[in-house]
Image 1: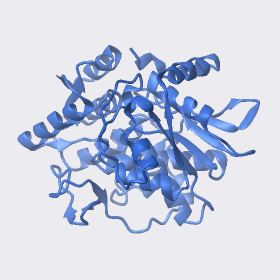
Image 2 (image 1 turned 60 degrees about the vertical axis):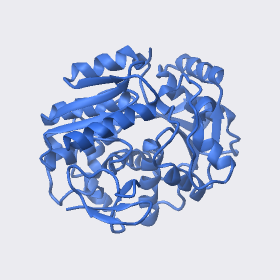
Image 3 (image 1 turned 180 degrees about the vertical axis):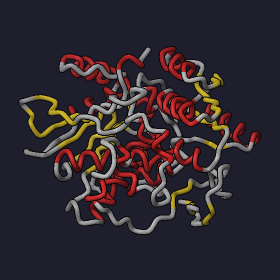
Amino acid sequence: MNQLICNHCGKKYEMTPTLWKCDCGGVLNLVKDTLKIDIAAWDHYPNSLWRYVETMPFSKGSKTWETVTMGEGQSPLIVLDPNEPNTYVKVDYMMPTLSFKDRGAAVLMTKAKELGVSKVIADSSGNAGTAIAAYAARCGIACDIYLSDDTSPKKVAQIKAHGATIKEIHGTREDIAAAAQKAVDNENVFYASHVYNPYFFEGTKTYAYEIYEQLKGAPDALIIPVGNGTLLLGAYYGFKELFENGLIHNIPKIVAVQAKNCAPLVKAYQNAEGSASPVTNKGTLAEGIAIAAPARSKQILEAVQVTNGTFIEIEEDEILNARSKLSEKGFYVEVTSAVNLAGYMKYQKEPEETIVIPLCGAGIKSK
């Protein structure tokens, strides 16, 4: 059984289906020995993110994932513009539910199935909810998704299609999370949270492993959008594991991007604070990263600092401009995903610097 440790007070717990935070309120991380990566083992598995299953904390020889997977992972890495041959986009919306959240959802729901869970609850701005709903359906697990009553109708339709029960909440993203957490505690069920459950990051870390194989090494910098930090932390953990195994010489610099109208992490970074204080969401088109009080802010800030990275904030008109520019290059992304190119356009890159930008969600998902 995997152990969990509180990121705040250090208390350890045995993992159970209903444990989702520490008694002190802190977020939980997996207790793991330093990983020994066996690259030769990767070719024993299908060409999906499960190629890296031996780097994940499942029992050796566990095959539960084989009945859950929909072939997620191994998204293309493509040069964005011939005039900038060292800048790549990783087309991570080429996934079963059209967003990168499938990486985490596939792994998290595989763990839920192993634990014999019969029902899960999740809260989301849309994409994580869709991914959890789809993989819960694959697992035969009942699923409630808590969403804003202002969520894109296309995302709501997608979640409903997978048979999940939608609970629409009027209020902030934090109000929605609080409603879901209250239901989790009242019903004593599994909280399939892309923020609180560390198994989700075991899925998103495969983003780093894939880039490592595609580039035959590590890029110099990663441009990553950040709300709750599920991709940022996953990418950091993945490259850290590669670094600790001597497979790369440097962990890429993390350039984190937030919308100016909801940028608690930018504010904390600018003020040299160890964690972010909640802000008021002034309203942004980038609904997927509009997180006023990120639960893992301490870990996100640490990851950016440790990699000598930085934060960039984006204005609303810059988001729409960047979305148009991506469309002109053939990439139709949802509005939130356009903050990545907007961040890249503001980033002061070095000559010959190799940069990877994720395209996180498909344009068809947006309002």
